[in-house]
Image (tube, rainbow, N blue to C red):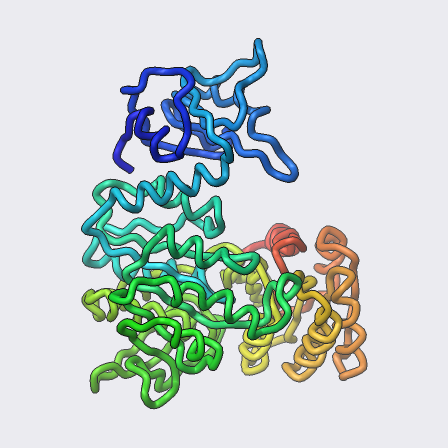
Length: 465
């Protein structure tokens, strides 16, 4: 972002400059001293598990020009030269993000939220729009109440289009983030069973996701998934223009066909304004095809060149844990979808696995799906049934919740089932059970650390030449 003075920083955060030259200018901001750049500002946040004030000395050693604090450092404690005191560090960070958004005018602001596919859709969209615009995007999945303001604070002054991902853990969060970003275009990819631990029902999740449509300016454009009934209902909360996508015959961008596979990536054909477009993606799965369709709908809403955008989207590679394919020795193929999981995401991956025809067996390494509340048992048993229906011949279930999936899958006819309490133990033993030509899919919630299994397989089996 453009550099601002310390006096402006105090104004932006609603704080008081305790010490330091008011005219000193700063341009980078962090909440983690490990990422802090020399001359930047450190926000010393107090959290449940960590107190940022303990790292003021680290910030000073790394050359921070200043720090935003809730309390004055103890006598003798080293700290950056400049200090801005605020009542609440998290609120101050959000206020600073809003200040940046108001100061960066004449740009196209795009917000992406949804239960599944936010990050992949954001990456496809940002890459597509980069064909004709300087784009700033959410780094990684910095999509919560801390990540969004940090993404705003990292926005280059010369960016023309900003694509930001919005996540949530409870009611009101999407509304606050939408108000902060004030998007010109808002996309809700879908509503699925995720974070049920914090919500009463799927309708409750939909209402929380739909806060984006309720908060957006009337002149902003809503991008709506017409195939998802919950999204359709929530879209009614926005009175302004809309662009629609899906398989429904009335969609502005209508899916006509897709080739669902892991490798070399899914193909899709969609129609817009009486013209058909074919997209050959490097990322597999039907869910990715719909992510790309959603991204294309935002491109239309932004008034960008669709053909140029689609050409750029075709270059996007799968990220680690997000469908990346590894070709291993003995004709084995490993699909690394380990970053996260939910019942709907698991079902989508299993459908792609079902229609795949590997030379060997279909193998699923399934970690617990977390944050499902009182539905966790039923949803894991359902996953076990789906694994059997998908023709899985070897199931490695990982975690206490996945024991229910393992037992159900065994009863439903999966011939070989193993259960491990954690991914470290699964990683130690899985290789000895694999055979030539196996297609192995690894998936589980972030907290299960299923990437351990992926790393073990790549290390022990080796990538094919």
